Figure 1 (cartoon, rainbow, N blue to C red):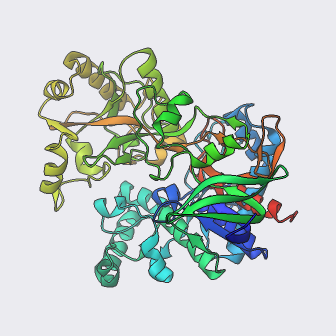
Figure 2: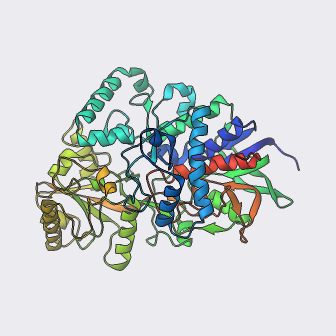
Length: 563
């Protein structure tokens, strides 16, 4: 067979998982190549919060937060259940901190521990109230040179505030603490003087969240001369003697055969934007998706694995999160806004159906369950009042009446995205739900706010609920009465950050066939692989953390390097 290009390790997909694997392979002395079918790199990672969930990481231990492999494994087994083997869970926990150490020692990919960001179920044995989630350190995108222009970018932050924030900074600023105010002033001053960044179409040069992580990974690739091919569509795996030895791709309209002498890693995301495929596997019963994943997330890697005889798992699962749909059709997650006091979710009957401040996957699962069993909930509505509107951001809407508020009104109220009324009854009429039921629901919620105890769903009882809250609100920082006109409503959809079902893999990231035997030469990580978290979401960063960890594992295994 004639080959057009030869490398040691071929990576399909340019999110954090794929880029980590390529960098690890290069650092260990192998040639690697990353291919990406879209016109920019970064995948869904670039649009994300960029956090990784890594138990017993060195940063949390240095901060005096105790953790251990046994505690983490026990916690995960409780959250995940028996659907994922203990061997695979232990491989993740053990190799996660090794991956972080490796990247910290050899590359610009650096993290800090989010010491106040709780696991999503801290009340479980082994759960922690902070430290396991790690934030990527901010990054000056000028260090990427012209490569920055090819990175996938999210404009969310710039549409709300003129500067970027880390997760920890966002929490401080939303609390309006003295530290939060100082952070805001510091960043505003930096923004005012960073004219060169604005001349390049960006608020400032300081990248945070998923953008920082992707930029750091790309810098690590550039430092090692790891090639990245954009506009390169993976078409089929090439097999010789029952071993995957390469791939046929289409690069800018030309068909090429790439030989991979050590292995192929599929890291090309899930099937978030393939509605037909999702319905085939019992997702999206309404026939419509509301995903925030990258537009290239269409199931290509999963289909190639199926063609090679791979087994599948968790195909009916996704990384669910409540979301709004902006007038331009794009989705905006409500991870923060759903938890702030003075806003509740109601269904078409005007009734609550969940603890809105609970982990976002649980909220959306409750939305789907309510839709199936009780009342239409797609969409549901976030109901809030003037006090909430004045104090907290909601998607692209900054808090209070700020410069540009008239433009926001024109874009959001006039398009129907934001409903506004002087009374709850009028608001109910606008969203076509029973006014009496809505008023009863609000009255009951307001009584919970007065006593500080949500007798229906326990909102505010968990440390997870209180991460995004308002400490000034007493006695429960997640509960405030909805009493101050005007009143507002925003449609809430069962969105997702991507799908989590895919190719079944073992603890070495090897893709398994229908008999649970490894397919030689083939690895997978990220959302095209069955999630090590199963149908659960143990903590913030449960998507990217495993993607990077098993990318690290795959590269080492493909090169025959043992610990």
